[in-house]
Amino acid sequence: MRIENRENTLTQLIHQVQDDKARTLDVIYPTDSLQFIPQNEPGQEASPKLICERAMGVPTTELSVNSVAFDQISSRAGIDVRTARRLLTGYPQEFGALINKTFEREPAARLVRAHMTHGNAGIARAFLSSKFKTFDNADLLESALPQLIESDAQWQVVHGTVTDKRLYLRLKSDRFTGEGAAVGDTMALGIGLSNSEVGMGSVSVYQMIWTLACLNGMQTANRHRSSHITSARGDADTWEMLTDEAKNADNKALALKVRDLVGSYGSRDALDTVLEKMQLAAGDIVQGSTHQATENLGKVLQLTKAETSKVLDGLLATIGQQGYAGHPVSRATMVNAVTAVANDADPDTVDDWQRLGGRVLDLPARDWQRVAAAA
Image (tube, rainbow, N blue to C red; front, side):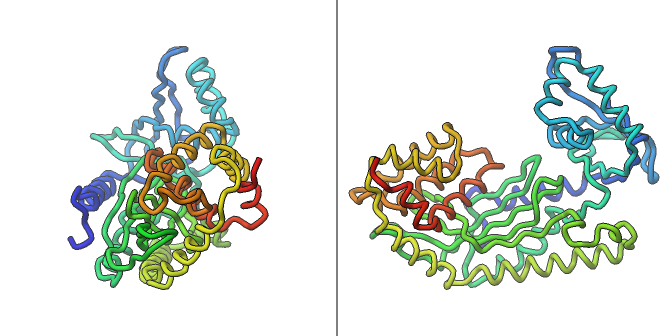
């Protein structure tokens, strides 16, 4: 496959998505047909189960509840997630009784999404509104891959993974490259896709810029999201009335939108715009100490102390990098310092750091002065 990398990342991703699709079971259950079982004794590691009585032709099913589904069950019961986890560990039977009482006294139709493991057993991976729109990872890849493969940008996969929360696929262009903030700072156009089958994010297509010396990725403001929750599209009251044919047509429209966005985001113009911004950002010099500038940036971006410390580590790595070594610390340097954090981040927080890099590049003058001013 032309866009595949040496690690066969895309091939592995496709196999996982296909396997997940083959094991998927989606059933809308009335909550009074569900039973939550904690299983653990007080103080022990929790491993709850969800017993789903026969419904929609599906026999009674026993599902292990993963962390995503547990948090959603707790939130649906009106319990803060951190409190719920503490109660499950410390007071499992009482917590289970409370959840089951809410199932009974506050009846509602909920979509349980599961991956079956064997027989009538599996893993409950989501506990969602019955209005949840199931545009899945396989749908996203089927929509995007033909356009990516045929694109003049000559895309190549950089990262691809599926977590319990989301799918991520990020690519860089082998054709559209240029010089960024300084001589030797080569950058390339990129594109990213993400999706959540379990209610933890929208269907997203976004532009990226990669710094090739370190493969730090920055997301630009060019980003499109399509929600899985039908109320966001103004048709919550009618979604459940639609036939499968109508719902499939709705998904087809989204698939075509993904295809067209992938095509339009692969333009040379997008890269040139960001390269110009990075070149200008190299002239926005930090006047104070680099440590103080990092502290100031953390405040502007509302980072925690631990997150700010990671940005400082990214800054120290950046100032020794080709294109930045021997040059004053600038806004461009700080962009790279922030995006560098993504290289060692949890897969579900990589997008956050890459978006923050774009925010630094686009900071209003007033906010940048708060970062750059001498102490």
